[in-house]
Image 1 (cartoon, helix red, strand yellow):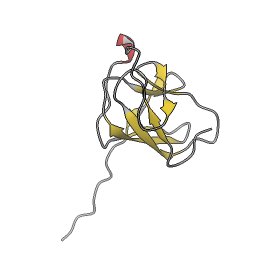
Image 2 (cartoon, helix red, strand yellow; image 1 turned 120 degrees about the horizontal axis):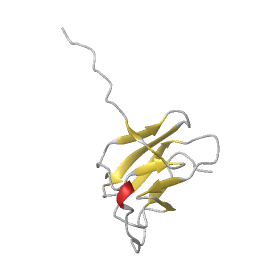
Image 3 (tube, one colour; image 1 turned 90 degrees about the horizontal axis):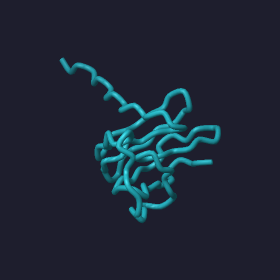
Image 4 (tube, helix red, strand yellow; image 1 turned 90 degrees about the vertical axis):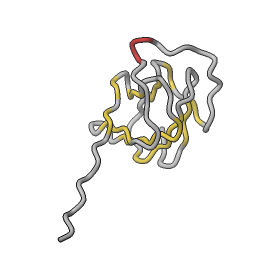
Length: 100
């Protein structure tokens, strides 16, 4: 199981993420169609599955609300982030209150 603050890295590209909200159940987090590994740097010895090459953006949060999962991208790459085979959604920014 994953825990808040844990770093994960892709083994097929440069992507690295930090877990902001951890799911309560077992989940497989992938990047580019391949499971991510614990740590800040993967070994990048594979290739990204073309069906999973949507990319990730530095500093953006990715979520799967049904699982209670939230990640923040600390290093971007070409692979798509997914949980249990389902691509993660980019979290929308919260609207700031108006200052009159």
